[in-house]
Length: 385
Image (tube, rainbow, N blue to C red; front, side):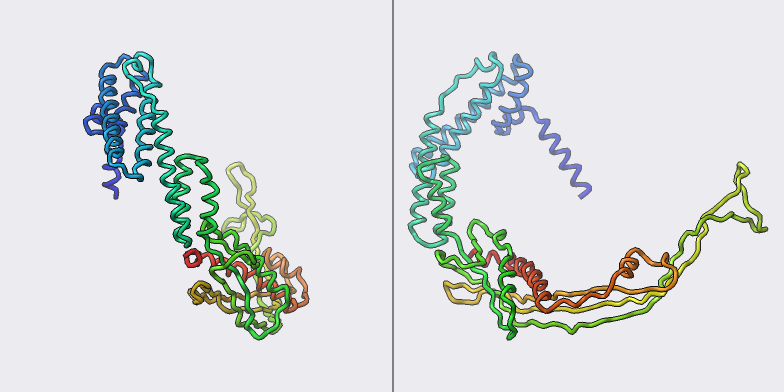
């Protein structure tokens, strides 16, 4: 790789330094035109570059016009797009020369391509438009998506052509798959009403694409293609537990300053005769009794994708979350300075009531939303197909 990079760099530099004459010889007519035009803009009386420009300009236009003549003679509808693009290219090329100084510009004869461009653009747009209508009339989603691509091309070629924007909207609706997110509780445990509504707040709309719409609440005007079902099969709560542990924490800290002594016990002095003082480091410790309150809620099941057109289960993913309540507090004896900032915060805490099961379910619902969204995101291709 180290050897290849310098070679590529040299090649790029050589290409950028190539003369307009070499570009002309290689058949790179438009690059030769650009290079010669750049030099003629700075020095209009450069006869060598003017000769290159004339030859490259004539050859490029000749090849393009011959291609247009062939395509028109061939008479294929799909050729109109290429014909339009060729006329556009010839017009762009001509405008480059028009921007050059007058003594250069006067050496060329210019052609008005406006009508050719308008006619070929309209013909090209019409071809795509009519193809789009044929695909849309087929009535299936895949054809509707092909219709959208044709209408989009027509709009790119000829913005605002006929009612192409409306047709694109029709094709988009006809080609889009719709999925409905549902929740089923098969755990055997009664859950609060807010549990379902909280999970359905998941922002699946962010996962929508051109060909996919996901609803969390049913829209009766939509004929859904897929059900995405969060099937909850397990809900359990751990006992409320309290764990205690006692341990010692030690730290080395600075406790003021002290004089630095030599081996004989005398105070050492610096080069100015001043007594040398150094930090006085001591070890402090504290005995800590930490209490941890623990409770958890586990919700598990699967996220299933059903294709309603075939009434088949097409994808299933296991899903499980654990919402954990963990609260720490404690007390200590000894030197407070031995405690880290984290432990000092824990020591300031007090015992709190354990959360009710309903609260733990709310925490689990938050986790389920994120987990469900991640799984649905992985399955977008299945839902779009």
